[in-house]
Image 1: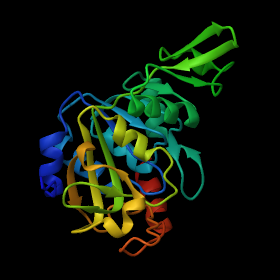
Image 2: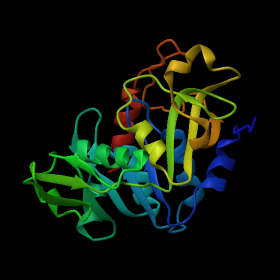
Image 3: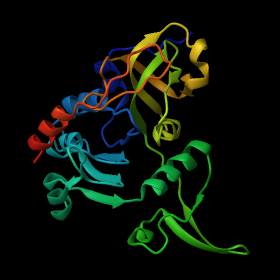
Image 4: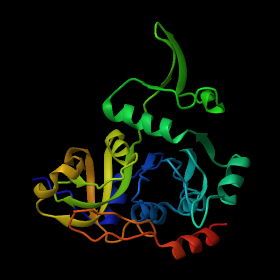
Length: 258
């Protein structure tokens, strides 16, 4: 067995490179520990990352403040707790041209990752027809015998970062719904995924029905309890305890990121 378990410091230093297109899994379970380690290692070094994230949040401002990001593909740039509000760091960075932004609907963003994960040249959508997002270069309209359809190009990150309840030492990762786009992002990544987990287990066979990311798509597994904090984690029948969102921390993070 090729064991994938390493420290988070080593996982990031070995697998995240300057200029990378980095996918951060949102879903229900956030990416906090892994993303924070990226920020620590690359702060002030101008790595020119492209950040792929379905929804930015207060924690995403760290990439902006540290000068880590040149472009963002996202469906939402703002804070989420205690309510949905614009964030001035995102807004001012876009307005000044310091960071380029490409907006997508949540559905189109997810579909593009799915197309990449499945090895498709394109995927059909009706999500953004008639909106300004039609101008994005990865979208086109095509006239067919069945009528006019919208096509999305696949979206390939270089590396994916996400948090999950458990994985085994080989790198098989078990996720409990709600999944949202996270498995597609991990499967779409060209080099693979760095996954933090609450617990590394020796045998996942009892929970094999919840394995969503196979070992051959995983670069490294890091045992990081509470790695989604201040986000929550629902583990269901998996052998770790669930925990909820830390609302007080989210509010503090929102205040600090303005």
